[in-house]
Length: 177
Length: 243
Image: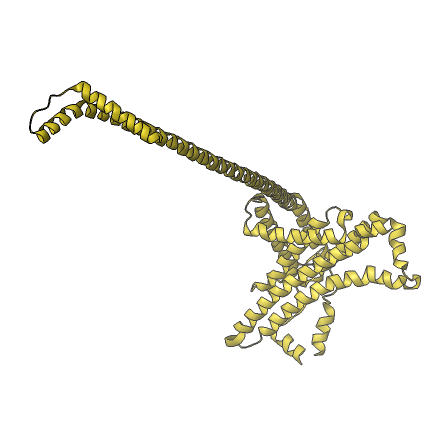
């Protein structure tokens, strides 16, 4: 035990020796190597990445701003388009109403015209039929009188015409009364 | 009793593979470990830096960037525009280097290449560099009078304690915390090695995994304390505004 303690005292490991100069020099060389070759590229790459990230953040912010602006423009255009569509629909509805009324008026006019033409045609036909009947009534009356009398009666248009004229006058006079 | 057992089985804490040159003793294992750690971190860093891109980063670049972002965040919070030039790079280097040194403990080469952070010859100059640089940065930022006058605040009679804290406790704790944790890890491996061979692998694997975790934590603590010391020395932007 005493031998061990004696050995311990001969080599006090807390006391440095000449090694300190060598390892100091080695460390200084390592430090210089780091300063010269390692730290600058490392910090440069980090700074460049930070710069790149900053730019990306700025670009992202700009893109977001542009997106917001585009969305605003889109919403505005959409609102305008909706307003225009509403106006166009209102106008179309008004046009349709106007066209419907025009067509209805035109149809009413056409119906009235057809009615008028029908009435005129009927009046004309009635007149023509009356004239035809007046022309035939003398012969028919003579035939009828001959069948009643049992002998032929001469057909005299002038007499018949005069009779009919008297008959018309009576009817007219009766109608006036 | 355990010390006797350890010595009998060959646990020799603090012993190194040494060489004498001109009456000076050099711990060759520490130098070799430091060289290997340096080659690894410089090689990985150089490989990463050559392929560093602002586009899609590799996994290695992501790891370096995570570290750099963390350091930059701490610096920004603590010092802002008053950050001394080179502090970010120094903290990145220190973290990566200490981590790599600590993780050498995970290799089954503890007899030939122990983690160099388990030797005070590496941790002392690291802590010394931090403390010297912190003081230089503080003096440059505030001026010598204001910087040293700060030790007398709020009570002048506490200045000696503050002075001892600044120039003795801090470097000692910064160095010995790292050293002690990694050194203890090595002793633990040696103790585990005394176990029977059929059970040895399990605690050894568990301990090595835990040792890797300790390696990360210690690298993180060393870097974080360095940043805190710098922040205290140069002051934040808020301090400037208040003054």
